[in-house]
Image (cartoon, rainbow, N blue to C red; front, side, top):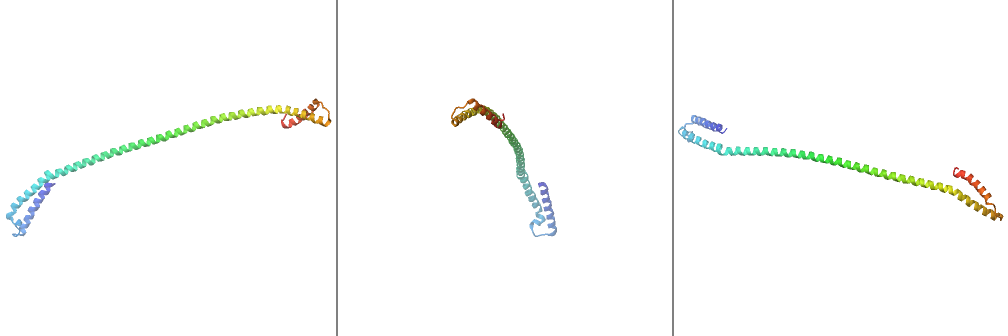
Length: 196
């Protein structure tokens, strides 16, 4: 590229010099054909030195900097790609951990709920059994009281009736006849209340 520019500049300089010589015969010394050889020499020397400085000193440094920047950019892109892959892996691991913890929490909640229901049902069964036992015991006591109450009521009725009759008549009455009357009345009333 630089060689091409160098040769083009020499060619155009020479062409310009020819045109200048054709148009003017005198005037400016750089257009005078007597000085062309020296001008071409200095032109060649100046552009040669410039070419050597550019090709050997400046352009290698520029190309070296460009290459180092290119390699640095590629390394940065590669590092960014690795970071992205690592981030995606970490995100997947995080999502898996969150899902696992949700399932574990749900299982723990279900187990606690089942245990609580079992405890409630067990306590309810024990309580129902205790209530049934108490009801049976109370029914038995009521039956005992019902059976004993009739006899006690009859006895009290006989005693009260004999005392009343004795006070009304003034003489003692046979307890067996009063007992028969009270038994008869209690049987009639017992059919109403006890279903006997």
